Image (cartoon, rainbow, N blue to C red):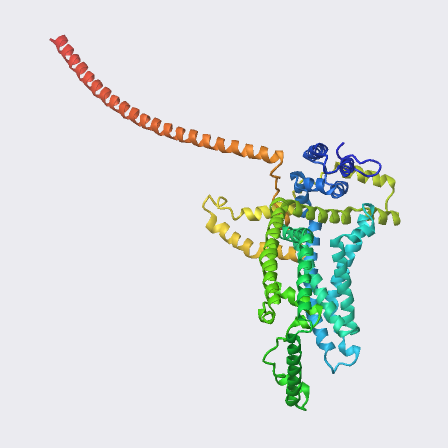
Length: 585
């Protein structure tokens, strides 16, 4: 009955989730009861189905955090992630993402060189070859197809608008749109050059954000890091508001103090002199030769100092005043500009005391405390929640309602077929590990390297050449075929080694305490067995010594008996001879 689906395609888990949504944080006993019900439900090992995964995904956050770290759910997700289709999707994501980054970095640089070359006056001259852009088109179509398939698959669980509002989905769609848009601009040569340069840099940023999102889905360390950054940032609102207020206050005070001061007049004169000197130097250094000849020969000489100079930024505008105050907080100290006025110098000392000594150290303490919460308490929750979301999406893609829609549209099925498939799905256990020929063959290949295999002494003749052949040819060839097929032809052990994570048990759960007590009992039993073994070994040694002494005693008795028998024989012989003599006489 735990896997029975009602008329609305919901499991009993849906009722528990619905009840949990109406329970607030103050109802501790009710939450504990719901948690116990969930634990009981998961301990009976329900079937891994789309309804089960979406039911876990639809739970309120507090209950979902408990569910994802349950060993039953973790085992289900490990089995799912190591199957062929999710592995293939992860590998294809890696291939297309790497191809997008490499191709876009090359083609965008080529496009910028063409756009800012004055000799290229037409769009055709500014355009990049379509052959170079083909990997970008293929990758964009692949990722767009993934998003469209997922949107169609999850339409029964949520709305398209709610799906698009999720941060990760927004990033995926932005990545696809920017890649496709700027690829078209590179091929056509259209668009403003400066805007293209800015947009290309933003597209590269989204590419590397996609790399973080990909690593977050397969590695727990990156999942904790990304979630930790989000968790810490969302809880720094109060601190950031205080920081902005203090920076704006000091910037406004300095801007007010410097207005109409003698230092500002002096700064204006110095800047005017520098501008005049720079113009004269440029006129003297101007050579009426072909610019591109100088460019290809060696280019113009670089100035001695590329650092822009600005005397007293507090004299320019409020914008430069805020900018200078912010850079001073980051360590760009220029205290000489405050010497002319005592109050400005006092503000400078007060600013460094408040911002650098107090606020920045408070920031370090806050970030350390908040990040430790994620790494110590929410590490498993963060990772398994991300894995649950990925597995749910993949399961919706492979077995989602879109398949029924397509088959119904082409009349490839009727209602009886649907009932039979649903009944078969209920009887099928997806949590068992498939014993396929690939698993057996890989196990046999690895067993060839077991030292106990050649215990009969034939290893130098048979197993050494076989091991060399397996390690140098068969295993590399199999792994290469798996890479070329995006993991589809890999043996299950390789997929499990790459993507399966260790099942963790919550520290505050009853199972953890039970497991700890069992480990203690096993440790005590090991100690007792060691003591019994030592006692038995000592007793066996003592018995062997006694047996050796008994053997020596038996041997001595045998020798004595032999001597006595010889003596008795001699006596009997003598008596017999005496008797014979007496009878003769």
